[in-house]
Image (cartoon, rainbow, N blue to C red; front, side, top):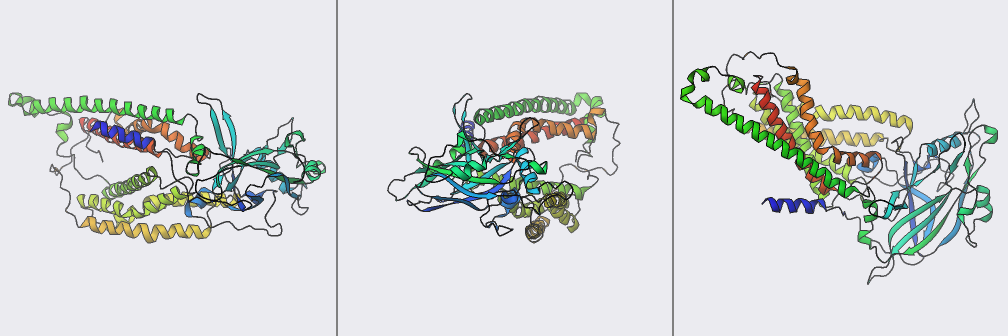
Length: 565
């Protein structure tokens, strides 16, 4: 049985391929649509709209460009997909095509310094290392590097840098020329081509040379031209205009099929991730094994010895002088000081656990692909709302056990955690509104989140509670004495603050390496796709939490402190 479980875990760990959307074939000379997405930076972690800087807009006369219909996860993640000025036709290369020339608006200047706000914003975005993001046939554009690590290969980094940050000795440079390479694949038995790769090499080229030399009829060597600087101050030396251009090359790739076109992007999230993930799992297993041995040695051996001594008729005098956990057997199941709050926390935890397990299951089977932008975030929100019935049921069962059959406890289960999260989220969203960030949630989306909370999650919490209150109350195996026993003064390491820190340190040690990859995907704009590894670590984390709880409760009872919940 253990061998079967081990091979199942290995199979889940290797399930990193996640399918994308349906394939599409393009005929020769057919138009291929290029879209833009929000620009993002690992330095600030605040995405901005692509057209918030001086770039070529699809319609120069319109002030606001409407984004495509997006799901809830895309909006929360900061994606803002809009049309672009880059035009492509299948199998038609472009040596160089000028897109447009942008100039600072005379009226858009600071009153005191007379510095152009547009140039200042562009320079600040470049200095903050923002990257532009384009989408072609649902593939993100990427820079390609040669990985020189232990396993040599190609490394794909999403997006392209807006420019080169400046310093005291060199000015800021803007990448105003993009050299695209689109890789295509010919499917067997079908007409047309499928797009399997979208690569870019950015260049900074003096705008005057683009105006004179950029033409589809002549060769254009982007590497031989001087760069285009971005100078915002002093106003007398500020950049007057910036010309934008691009080139396009089509390349047939016979090895990469459409079904595996995302492999390069996923594997490039971390070139050595597989070995580190297995190291994280082995680290977690070692912690679990040590903890399991500790539970077996301390609990089984100590309890067995105590039971033998307590049940031995020859030790009557010793049995009368009870010490440790035996003296609090009549107080172990005494109601906690705040039983309603405990029921609320246990119910909320059950709701989160149900959401996590179902989401992880869908992710392991490939239903939450990175190709479906926002699907993971949307699934987590919807599943949390749907798991409200689980939280309400568990909270009701716990409350009934403590003789706290109150609907106020159930209402607190539905609003306690989501309410605190929403208050923090709303305050942060106000700051994002002020910053005009791309991930600032619109007002109507906030109303949608509130509707999901009040009209789906909370009613399901009450539905689960109604079912839970109809169940028989859980009877403790030991009756509780009428007079609470005096609790002796505890040592420093048995104080609640120290116990809480100890209980959290061990599970964190079992999962911190995998947690690093998850946070890297959040803050460093990387794909996280190894849900099989995450499922294994998550299972180990649950076992670790259970075992550390057993150990700490045993120690607490040994010190005659029955306030374990």
